[in-house]
Image (cartoon, rainbow, N blue to C red; front, side, top):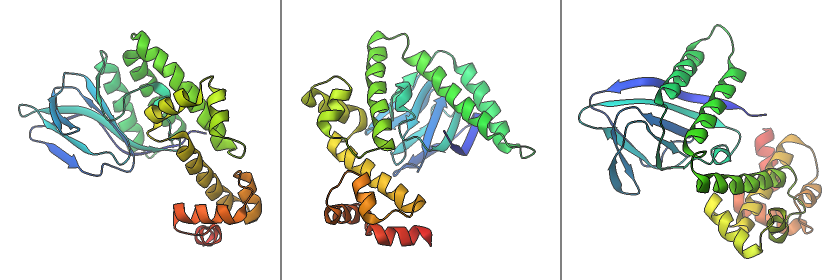
Length: 261
């Protein structure tokens, strides 16, 4: 079930002299819609945006932008979400500018979200999730649907994301060869696309997924370390313990004690 925790949201925020620099970004997704032109620095390059330009900063990514000619008019939302592939599911650029044609609808959604977060008379959790999803669906429609090459790329990436969902639910029996076969590609082509989509190799991601799965089992169950090792696809419990310790800084038993405490 999708869960969203909004850390900040604003609609039509107007500033006359404003600049922000977050070298280490934020521990959450930050979507910014520049209603008026703004100055944005991306990969060291200073750019003046068009009206209705957008950027989606991923957690931990550097953020730098400021007003243009003494005005900054924008919408923004910063939120945590329990789906690490959320942005990718919509085929939207990450940490890069893109432009949309319908800025008013974005503003209307942001206005409702700002009201829902401020309203303490009743919970709006499910409606907030629906509105955030609707926002990203609209952005995807405006940015992707009219571009055949982007649409084909999104369809491919969605197959990869579905594969990752399967791996997360049960990582035990996966290999890189099996992953490639699942999306009808050769291992070499699959590896190249996987790196492009997710920024790491399929083998490195599989290990990361197995460690995350082990953490969940250690937290939510009383299964033995041996059984958890097998559920993560490792026949050698000694190797599993060593790998887990290298990745987390704690042995599986130490990790379980820490989270239980």
